[in-house]
Image (cartoon, rainbow, N blue to C red; front, top):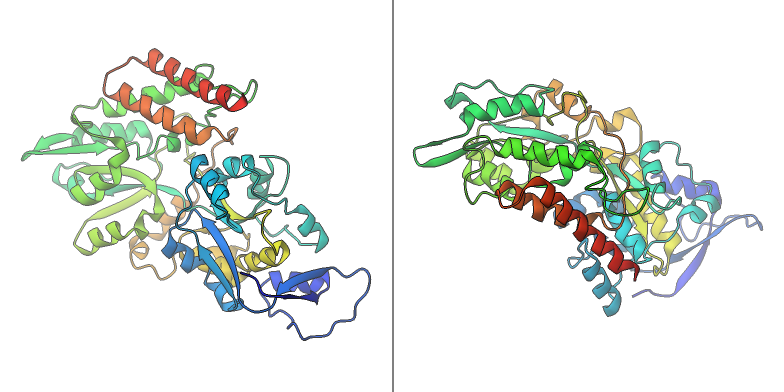
Amino acid sequence: MFTKSVVLTVTAASLLTIMAGCTPPSVEEKKPETSQQPKIEVPQGPVTFKVASSRTKDSFEEVTKSIRAKYPNVKLEFMTNYKLEEKTLREMIASGDVPDIFDVATTHIPIILDLDFPLDLEPIIQKYNVNLSHIDQEALKDIRAYNGKQMMIPTNLTPPMALFYNKDLFDRYGVPYPKVGSTWDELMDSAKKLSRSDGGINYMGLSTSNNANYMVKQMSLSYIDPQNGRSGLVSNEGWKRMFEKWKDIYSIPGNYPTGTRFTAGTNYFLKDKNLAMYPFYLFLLQEKAFQDAASSGFNWGVTTWPTFKDAPGVGFGSFSGGFMISKSNKYPEFAFQVMMTLMSDEGQIDLAKNGMTPSVTKPELRSHIYEGNPVVNQIPKDILTAIYNTKEPKPVFRTKYDTTALSIVTKYMHEYLDGKTDLNTVLLRADEEINKVIEADKK
């Protein structure tokens, strides 16, 4: 895959210039060498880096435009077989189809770390004196919380969560639109007026979204108790409150008809148009299904993510996305240099135009968020600002078991909402199942 390489001698300052997005010195440029100058290996000719990304392929192509422009000899091969699951990653290892670079959300870190994929980037950062002070410090701190090392450079924060709503349903039944800062309880009151059967169609007032993890994060609930390394579902009273809140929402008459699944919320909202309020990521606006619905006359609105009375203004928050370099990468320093292009103004603007919040803290970069997007431009600026300014919840304790624990919680949440099992039994069974996973892993 790689051709013969040459050695390019650069000073730490010139590497920083490259990483800042300026024109790099050419391979032919002569620099006076000293024993103190670090050297970086730059492959000569075409280079391919396999990238495991949690973005869609289209989104990946959009946000890496700055890399392709700066490094036309570098091909970033999007790995279509990548999934955030241990089985898939182990199969990739066994087949030798290993990523050179990971472009993922921080939620992927525990499993990737457990399989010993990523390189500690701190030596590269120290060697070339890379300045990270201009990057969101909370995002950096969040990454270091996993194992105390800088295994990832955060390129962006995820788009915020918001509450989408169907204006036509609100207008039809004379219910006021949701407003900025609405609480779950206030939206439940509206849902009681919206949930009904009309003309043979079941209209649902309010969804909790399609993923239990969103309210889990909003309530700062950890799947694993940091004190003992076991499931926290029974020991933490917050889990009981979360399950009860879901039950309250879906017990509203007409809001959870037989056969309904909360995981199908996007279809109910965009395809069937029988769901009045749908909390979801703002990037729903970029989905083809949303744009098709909007172009065919779907009358939609959006406001801030629902909050709790005892935590006003606190929403789902966000987590960061970024890049990690695999230990198996033949040219880790060059790969680092290539990916740092995303931290240049051009790279950060490309991310912003795709709805991501830049991790570089220059205020002017955020002015490009969703720039030129005709759908987003329909949102009043004060509402869009409020959506992006929702407060972060308290951080949670993350482990490699979280993805499996979420699947277990989802399974038992369905049982609870369907009335098959009482709350205490559901929590006990989920708790036991998560602990069995942990115990099996430690054998």
